[in-house]
Length: 531
Image (cartoon, rainbow, N blue to C red; front, side):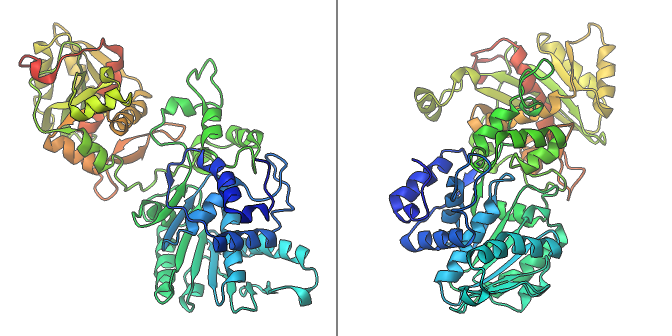
């Protein structure tokens, strides 16, 4: 399909065909989509007022709305109260929302819109003048013949339509919203809002919509540094919200994000490939070269927030492991022993208050569900793995002797440890033992890589765990904590409980990661001898 004109998009089949190009881009979340004759007419009118049919796109030289802009419109047109549009930079998400709201103001009587940018009041005014007022003045140079009144007075910026509709621009606080009643409130650059601003906007806006049928609160933006209490992040996590979110999955191997293309130092890097796969604006509004230029100049964590559809890890309070994944992977029985080719890993709490010794090994765990998945080619039976907490204790008293006793019973099992703090101190004691156990010092990069591998295994349903109180508690509270470069992370305690114990997960993840270097096994847990 060649670029459709605005008139072409009035036809539902043309609209759906053009939108399908955006639907082909893998989304982390894509909520309900609705298109009707009226919603298409509204978006087309808004696009006309913004002169999208005249502006040349930087990515392909075309004109008119892009496929993802139709996708944004149809997410909003599904009519949910809470809405989050979390898209990479240069996806024209703001323009898409503006087109929808301008069109509604034109078509619907008495439609009231409040819009702000959660950066500065000056920025909101600037964007109003450049994004909305400038194209309208180009279309209608004579104020007397314009189909709306334009007011650019500082602090009173608005559009007033003859049908009683208004689009008002406010500074980024709740004061302007409190006195109004809105059919739609649009908070742009939601990722930039701190906790206080997020709360102020929410408390101010939400009551203004109580008496409005079909009211909508729309939060859009790119990833911010802080998650906890951020308006955009909280809306993304709201199960009642309609969400559109494109980005690089957080479970992506960090080594793939280290460079634009594979090179001698970064043989597994493939950032270009990820961007081409998940950025719905590349090739339309954004040339790939422009993204590459910013990749070269930006710190990696910032690039992933701006262009990779990821949030920063400051104040992360959301649980990293979805409860549904953990429950699906659970087994009610307990293993009798791991096979010879299991891998053990040790992790001591950073305060030395507790310690975990975990194991990982491969199994033939075929059940009715697994067998069906294997027949469908969705699960590779050779890659189903167990993680098991073999020992957990408070403190570190006699920990080295306890670990050594377990390793003596299975001399072929290596012990992986990270050389940090209390864990390294225990490893130094083990090194003095004779005969010395098989010890593997984890590299620094193994920690974020192992975290990602465990998440990937749980997501793909290729990791099994047994119900154990300490492991289950860790999975219920572990959050994302920044570690190293390139936006990498590890399991960490939540901000509300910085001393929480996540060592069972940390140890299990390291054991699972180093299992790759061991020969596979097909022994069932119940067939193994007592450990």
